[in-house]
Length: 414
Image (cartoon, rainbow, N blue to C red; front, side, top):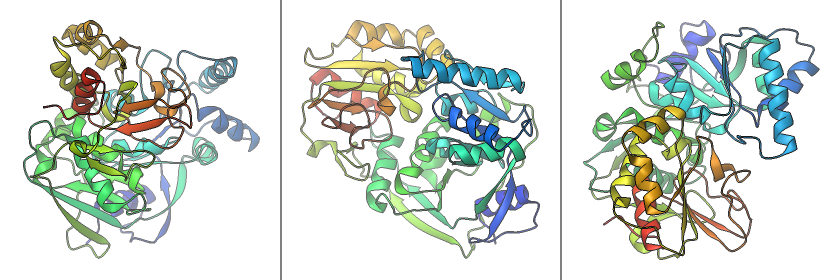
């Protein structure tokens, strides 16, 4: 009667079964760190006296947070990480032109159902959309993974969100997950696996499922997961020829809590400053905005760019507002270029940037100043998250972001 997470962690720890609350040592299938968290991992790896990594083919290192380097410090971090890659013959290194880590890993076939994925980044839970147990860890923990290839876990209980109902026009996966986070609160799933299931999820694309899993951490989740189906298999087998195993949850599991969510009447949602669970319908929010950011590991995929371009085509961004568009990866960028989406953005008045995290972390391209208001398709709106601590960040879908850019204030895409 195990859950999906229990089955995956049992396999990874070499046990027949594990139960929620068990402390286990699990073998890691893929370990990821990037240019911002990587240097501390490397320094810790060297401090413990490790001479070689456990498996150079299972480590993935993308540069995405401060790319291209925007300071001497970030340039030094890049140098340190490139030297580590060369010294240990890391097979999967993606330099400054590749894109955001949580888009690159699934795109490049590094994520398979049934695997255990760890990343020195809290939104590593994104990869559970492909049926993996994926979670963020600290940089020093990553150093031990680099050295030993395993890590201890407490097996989590599971909140399974059974999502039903047809989404209305202009309502998207981002609205669904913001609604769930509002319902649960920022700590409503602390250290629990968050499964997303039901007819609504079955109808979603893999990209939309990534949106749900990406933000599981915003309600305290240890990971986010979607049970693999035909869409998962098609996505994975286009990108990898490696074998994998599909696990699904037994609905009679004693550690399973099923939460029913009906989204039939859901309207576009928005998270207001300064907490992700401070969510209201867009119709109840009236706020002028200085900047719109379309991108990030949450909503920088091709489908998001299409949704925004459909609204922006033939329109102009308000004179009082600037819009920054950052595709999540080079693959997304090239497809958007081929489809003419980037031309639509530029003609509307947006600035299109190379694939990276952009203003999401508040440390690079497009940060906001004191008193400024940002509407963002990213995943966090904490005080100071995108620049000045005296600024405000609202979170929305790509469609709401595009419509609001035209109006210069937060509006629904109608």
